[in-house]
Length: 503
Image (cartoon, rainbow, N blue to C red; front, side, top):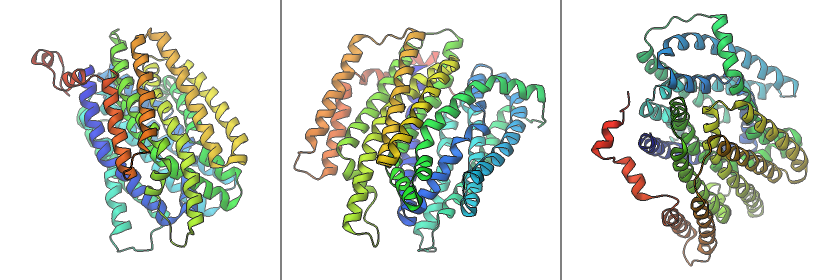
């Protein structure tokens, strides 16, 4: 199982590192630089508002289905027919609700129009993820890996043409960005549906009330967990835009979104761990096999990766913000420097939360696979209370910087509790040497980041050298073992005989 995890993780990382960084740091960043902070902040607030209620599109069905199909492949045809109709009904409820709430909280006609398109994109995305849950549940990880980047690849092609072909020079609007996403999602839904139908056979769509109620009953705990996590992960931009007056709210949301972009890129990579681990953990738990070694391996990889990223982002926050967001036309040097300073401070805190978020993708996924949803929901509900309380106190005082503190506090809180809970339930034991090595790794990587700033080279070279040194430290400290990883990627012939290939 570890061998399969490593090989499929390598494929997922390769594809996502090939596509998604260009999408987030190339296209998405270019869109914000083109339309400006106020316009992008307007979109970013609506996107996060629609994300708060995303769970209504799913009600935990995707997580439940992924776990259930991984353990019961024979249910694919039956569940696909019934769940597809149920999700269509949920999409209607979702669309009506977000439009109504948007109207009640004061969105104007322009905001409501764009919200309708953003909501449609969320509907399409929910169908993509549901269809992919069937594919990964069947342990078709290579196929799922390709689908995980397909929509972004299409968006890159469309947006690149609109932004850089010269055909629409100076005409690009934030609405075009949303329309490009719609087109890409539609194509991806169709492709994913074709793939799933190859394995399920023909299905007959029909609404079965008892079946739907059964699925919802089993999915509600997943739904509540995702809803609560959505609130403490996505609430900051909405509160910034609503709590601060007029243009100031949109500008602060824009500043937050600039800093959030790299965190989002990192989270997309860490999320890949949970995509692979959920069906693997579920299969191991059903067979009553030990999970300690797989948890330790995945945790070692993700804590090393996120730790290096967070430490270097702390020391090179201003340089990274200047690299990504240059001086805009008509912007004074003073205004540019103020914008970079604000974004850099927010970025330092958000990348600190990246480590905590990455930890939850391991231990939260393990607890989800084990069905410990009541405990996870209690933790998540506590996180929402902390997040809202800190945001309401700090946003009026520190604006985007206060929102970043709120994000960091809640992510650390939930990550620590999940780690403790998983350790207790599964009797996880990584050994004292592991924790000593982890501490040594962070101390030495932090020192490397600090001293790299003093080197007499260009900051990019200093940054790269510090990053390489951090990776080397991960192996020298024993946190990662090259021989172990290598043997898993290229196993012996005897091991190969015991490992099943992708179906």
